Image (cartoon, rainbow, N blue to C red; front, side, top):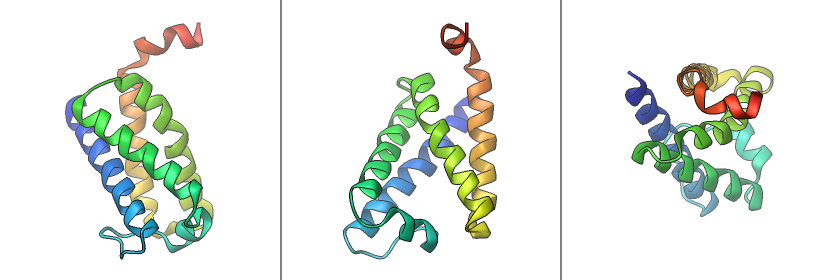
Length: 119
């Protein structure tokens, strides 16, 4: 079940990253996107940086490399996505909830790897 969650989370972030780069390069997005989020991120370095991190993390989850590190990096992004869709644009709130569940479950599964950080 954990591997399935890693694959799903990896696909979501890889797809979101590619989708963001399509918007950045002036093409129409393939997947639904929040117009408020695109307005907030703009078309500059912030969008490119966030989407680049999403692509790299998505690939690393799919090939199962550095998964505990990837989950820590994605945790801040997932929290921001969730907060954004609660307070600004609830249109994709269901996806944000799915991300929180996937991320939380995987973080819990890899909790042994974080003992050094919390101890």
